[in-house]
Amino acid sequence: MGSLLEVEQVTVTFGGHRALDKAGLSAEAGKVTGLIGPNGAGKSTLFDVICGLRRPVTGRVTMNGRDVTRLGPARRAGHGMARTFQRLELFGRLSVRDNLLVAAELGRHRRDAAGIVDGLLDRLGLDEVADTAADDLPTGTGRLVEVGRAMAARPSVVLLDEPAAGLDHTETERFAALLRSLAADGVAVLLVEHDMGLVMNVCDQLYVLDLGAIISSGPPEVIRRDAAVLAAYLGE
Ligand code: ADP
Ligand code: MG
Image 1 (cartoon, rainbow, N blue to C red):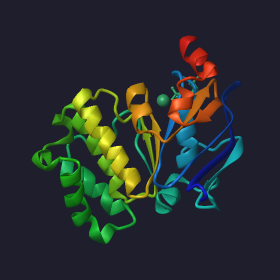
Image 2 (cartoon, rainbow, N blue to C red):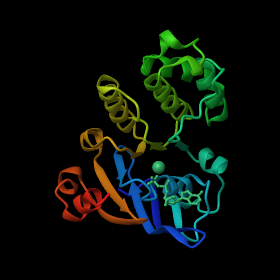
Image 3 (cartoon, rainbow, N blue to C red):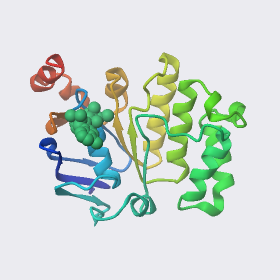
């Protein structure tokens, strides 16, 4: 089976600095694919390239075999790509329900927006805070709403940038179950995350980025024993 998302040979430079050097990865439908690496490795920059926020010097992004490298973020979203950001980007004064509704109405199934939002509130356990303003939520709940906003567009590929930052242990476990259920729905989930427990637990496949280049890839049980990976982290 081909991969839903293919990223090949992506190079990005900032001034003279090469933030990404021929980096590539693929993400399959129904799988959680992890992207790990030390701070500054280029993970968020690679997400920017994948979702169309940054044009690479070289490289190609394809979804379902379609080359989307030249499409902007809105067009890629129209083809089923959704993304969350490392920093929460919720509408602070809007309620949880309205944050989800805005996202659903921008999505591919806007006619079903209200129904999609009701389903998400239930699935994410957010019913009790549906009418709470996003600004008044604890971090963990805000993270769930952020993921909910990505899900509201019913994406086929979802990019999550450190979605579990600031979550406590119980919230992280619930979050792991949510990621698994997203994959079980057939979504290709691409996850950037520092919590190695979560990464090892939920990912089917891992890519390791260091200084802009992919230095290793494989299933978690292989990656955790990879000497180059250990060196990249220990050298941080
Ligand atoms: P990560 O998400 O893995 O921590 P980033 O993708 O944020 O890494 O950053 C990769 C490298 O690119 C870092 O050296 C960072 O300082 C640099 N960088 C990221 N964004 C910019 C930018 N907009 N302008 C200049 N340098 C940047
Ligand atoms: Mg980052």
